Image (cartoon, rainbow, N blue to C red; front, side, top):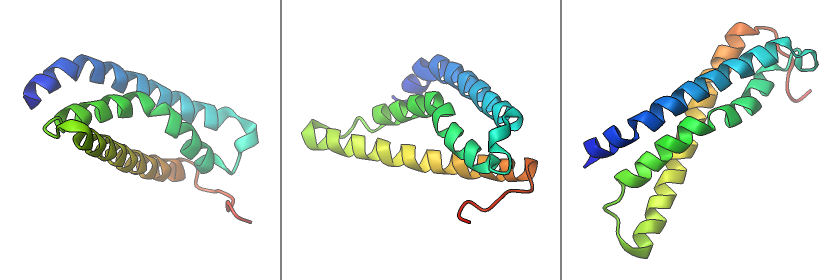
Length: 115
């Protein structure tokens, strides 16, 4: 069953990966060239990548919604939605950490957020 789901949604996943990769690249280029975010590049990357990674995260979250289809009924639907939201939050947190570290490596000198 899972292999059927993976095969069926592989096209959407590839398209969303390309779109998200393009949006991440555009976010980094925008932050690098926009003067008003100087010394706050990490914060700008953090905010922009929440929106840039929505396409791939939505496809992956829907994939996990289908994987947890063995939960039946109303309570099963609530459990599936809760698990998908939890997975989405964990995935988004991991992405933010990785891109935050990359942003700190690119722009070494940052001002403190809370001065």
